[in-house]
Amino acid sequence: MAESRTTKALEAITRIGNLSNRQVYDYEEVEVRKIIKALREAVAGVEARFETPRVRKSGFKL
Image (cartoon, rainbow, N blue to C red):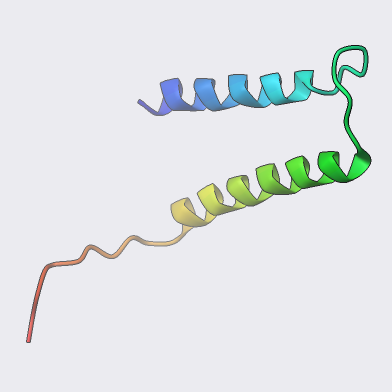
């Protein structure tokens, strides 16, 4: 499962990189910074989830 999802994520990132082709796409530098920031934040979120021990909720308790 991890290999499949990672491969799909990498392919999606490659497709985003294809947007850099100025012959086909028009974009502003501020848009590029927003895209890169969003990608970095998403990766940081994934890293944090792997580093933080997960606490399972055991349901209702008094």
